[in-house]
Length: 245
Length: 226
Image 1 (tube, chains in turn red, cyan):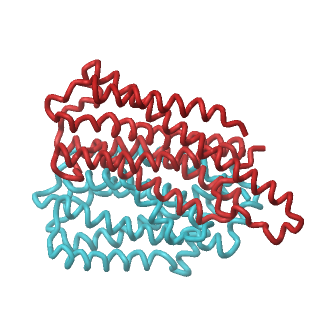
Image 2 (cartoon, chains in turn green, blue; image 1 turned 90 degrees about the horizontal axis):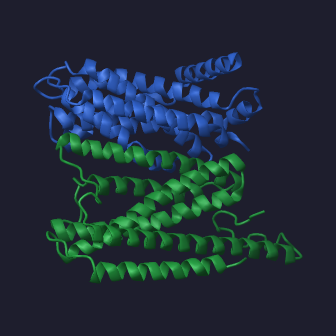
């Protein structure tokens, strides 16, 4: 297994994140209204954007898995969703900190994006108990893909419905988060978004490599083992099989 | 084409006949819903409900009663070999999805025919909001039937099926419940039904129903492969 792609992308991630955070702290102007607290925006928003994109990508990989029946796509779908859930925890935590700092409460219900994100996050948390409740490997992969597709279709619908519930009750003008940003802030935001996206990709590659390696190890061990019945369950709970043939 | 229609009718007829003879799901759903109203009466300490409180109580009760039915919709198939039979039969597998969703829709209609008048009798000061509530109920039933059938078929072949159905279903129905309560709350106002954003919420439900009917129909055959 070659790790060279992983190495290059890790270096790119570190460099982009260093540049991004350097810009955040030393270049972008202080927010006139919120001051220093607003800087968490450069972490929170990219984390949520990347997590949501990862959820959608997991659904796309689910479709590809069902169409091709290639377990590589199931592995991708699992890893995408897994890391997006991890990033989702980060997005919710940074969101709570930001909410506490600027509105004085750890949680606010009238921020539709935050509420939608929580619902999506709760849905994807059920991916794990669902996946591991199915014993047969092939069935597990197929059912997980069906989940990924259903949930992927749900994400945009949910954002629409939650946002509507809020606007209908108390209408307000929606500026998208980039809407009123000065150019320097927008540029820094994009650099941070790229950096967090690369971080996600690095972790995806790392996890895929780990899964593949442990799949290979257990395959080799099975081949080595003279008595396969005795040590057959090596690597029993490793999620999707890493076989890439 | 014809064989799909015949199979659809046969499966739906089988399900409704079985339910009529064994009464496995519906009486439990109705009883559950009525008891939940009694709990809400004391939990909220109200004897009259209106507006968003009425909408919330009605929809939470209907949703949880529906989950009871959704949990059981594929039980006979699993226990008595119905899945194998449909795999062997020369019909499209998606037919099973459509027939099961139709059966679930019917259960929900029967449930609501009993439970919504009971709700009105228990809590509502006047009944004029009930007629415009019918399209809202129908829209939510369609969404619950499509999604419930999909989720139930996913959960029924796993170890923790009773646990997984509510776990998977609840986050997925949030948009449907937002639309259903959004449309119902003004209809159940104490001052008489109002139609704020009634059409908008019905459109949202129609969109939701359309998407999940299509998703369910498209992916269902992969759940039956073995």
